[in-house]
View 1 (tube, rainbow, N blue to C red):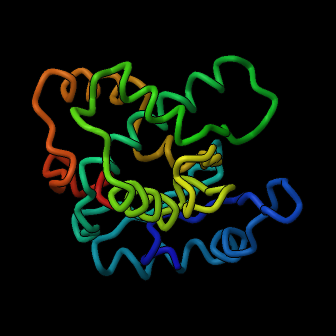
View 2: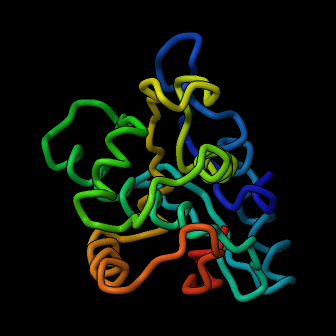
Length: 193
């Protein structure tokens, strides 16, 4: 699971109960962490445990993730900013919650989108972020016009630091962006998933 998803979270949101639950995969991994580190080190891959945010992830030159579409990269940037804002507001919840509308609103504020992305682009980007455990969608993606709520997982903190997000938003805001092209600016060590 770790190699395929890049991140394993200590807690995941359970839609049935409406609460975060401990993730058994995380604890299986921590129980065998030295073996897993030795195994991945053969391939030149580091296994990092970040206990402060509850994430185990892999990093290294041999970790070649798929190229993210520009829209998915922009979503990561904005989700990181939203998460930081909510955590600074002394939120009592362990995960930040936002909506697709709020994400698009923030993209508009920073002038990061020249045009409204197509529903297919949006669904593809959200699916990628869900697969790599950046978000958990609370509402079905069938109705993108409605309020699509999502939980932002702590893996977002590992992918991008707050100051890096603001700097990248400034960079994207200065240039022309083609939303349907893959993002070529990602560093393969941590930015690619």
